Length: 135
Image 1 (cartoon, one colour):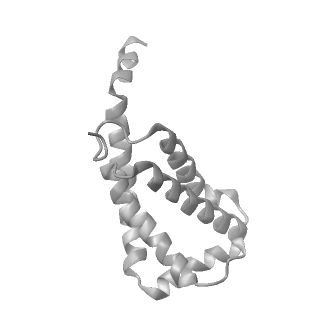
Image 2 (spheres, one colour):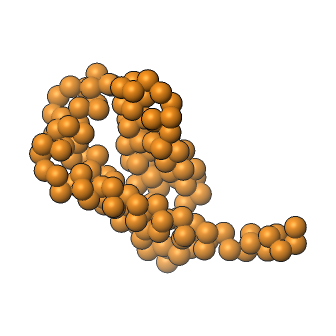
């Protein structure tokens, strides 16, 4: 279709929209985890037990919260975009494993799977020209 064929010119704008939308949602979800303190971090960190990592659950929970919150901000800005995407992929893979093994239904893990796939793809695409890292 000729009308939609011209949208290919705006790939970088599309990446900006994706970065802003995903980053804002990550900040909203992550800030509550980050502000929750050590009790919330410990609860989050117990997800690493599904990978047989049982030490320092508060540390792992804090890392999850900081990755979502600060990672969301950096995603929006396009700052260190590919390393941030890698950290977010790891974060959502752990979330997928936790949700699937705990609740035994793929539907319960679908949100984490979708985000892991999204950030994995964005890792290859990059942030686009509308980012802080571009000169």
